[in-house]
Image 1 (cartoon, one colour):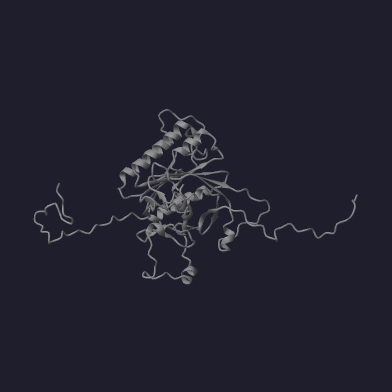
Image 2 (cartoon, one colour):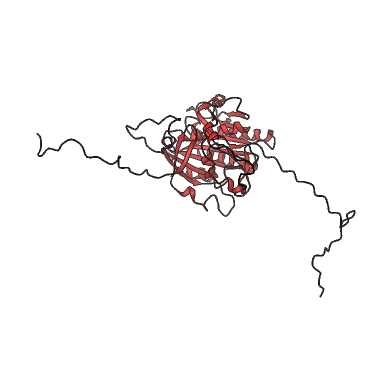
Length: 389
């Protein structure tokens, strides 16, 4: 039995190198990420912002929408809060220089996107930026878990460029601010009651065909965003698209493109649950084929309520809950589960409110406390004994 002395090198030195001359190590060149991307603090996959900082914080701890995933936004009623989320999503992509593919939208839809919010001068003068030496150095994965959805501040990525911009609904996106391209994808014009001929291609298959052509012709570093508004709505899509064989094949094809171009493509789809309730089997299959599913339930308006205050008024008055925000599924990051279930924040009762300067504000829902002034006061009219006829 032989013993080997410790701290001895068993392998012989390479040819041309002596043990006294250490091998020169070449510095590793870090790969430059595309604008609007940063690694997830959960598993390191690349993520992009949805344009709404509060929604980014809910996406399974990734701090954004992971590339290669699809988010389904359901909405009840006749409101259009989900459409505003699509505008933020498209505006963020154009500002970051991404290619935005808008389904059933004309090219003039670009002029309806919100513009960048002007920086808040008061916040800059009141709290100046700390010096680099005085800034607390913490791990990058914990730095993104802070309150990065404050008003007037843009969430920044690892390269220092803004990851999530702040938009103002009262403004419109200027051409100088838009660095990306908007590619409208028509769905065949206005729906008609005539039967489609046998040789005519399905509008949903045409969407996949045009999207695949754009992905194949673009470079490997190009980032694409797909915007699908009000899926299966009769005002935008022909009646034949509501057939299960049509819509499920479309979602299967979209899922295949997301997995094939897992480092270039993301998608957000809105869906009207007032026309297609969640209790139906078709909607359940649609939810299964999407990586994330959330639902917006607007609260009914109260009769005689005061109109909403202007954007420049008290911020607390602008954050009155306008609806409930339910999270059903989030993009998971491994086959054993995950998806934010460890923290359990999305399991709380959440509410949303729309602000012109902060966008869609999502926070835990709680009933306001009953103040003494709001209690019922006795009537000042004197009571009369007996009955008056």
